[in-house]
Image 1 (cartoon, rainbow, N blue to C red):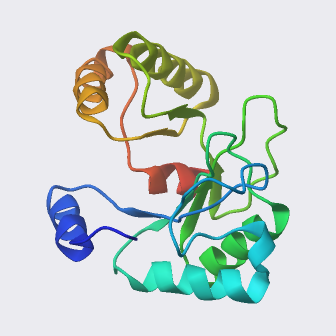
Image 2 (image 1 turned 90 degrees about the vertical axis):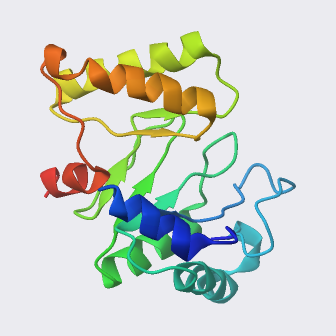
Length: 185
């Protein structure tokens, strides 16, 4: 929500046939000193303050399909913050995509929620991105669908493009995240 030309950027993204999810700024319960910006949701802020911050973020742009909630390096979102996000997303007919670290037990998903299967962080080298995308493809084949999120860098875009060109030959289709949310219903 902090982007300077967020309306123009989201309009261009939608014009190219992509859907937009609002990346909600969060500070995890374990990393209270990370910088997610002045309007980040955080456990210490309390429900009323976090709701005010969330409403500010959601008002910054229109036309997004849902909320994306990834918190810091550990991926941990406090239960109170996650409940707030889930309630607000459901109330507004939005999807909610969250991430749990690999060693955490994924929570039960509701109709409008999905868990990220593969998260590609900013500093991953080319081989790491390729391995993560290979894992995403394998999970999609095994489970019928899988959700991946990448921090967008020029390298990630290059590797994603190359990966997506070979999906049809593997019997896998690239679909919008909302299709994964709808499949879970």
